[in-house]
Image (cartoon, rainbow, N blue to C red):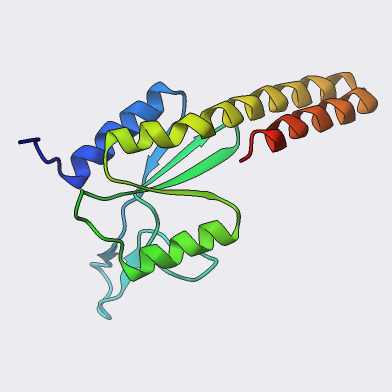
Length: 157
């Protein structure tokens, strides 16, 4: 019988894997804290999603590499998204962001197969843009941008 991991254990595995791939990984904590010196018993939220003014629903992990963000909601084999998490997923997809619901380390490995080459290509593009900006050759920069975006378009993502 396979050992069933907690959501926190799965998150940890995924975060370490993404760090090993060169991502900057943020673990998002939801909730709030009481203002102890405030007699009105107000709470300060840990975060607010400005687009919908929500203070919950943000994905568990956000992975950044080469100016690209991946929002990752981690669930156990039987875990279900809350309505606010589904709302945030729709918001991400409406903004053409990558949003993944993963239930295991294997899920994130499979999900990264088509994504990682595009993110790495984006990194090369950004480096070339930086190099071209310093040399001020706008024609070469424009041609490089077009060829890189053609490659990304052909990748099917």
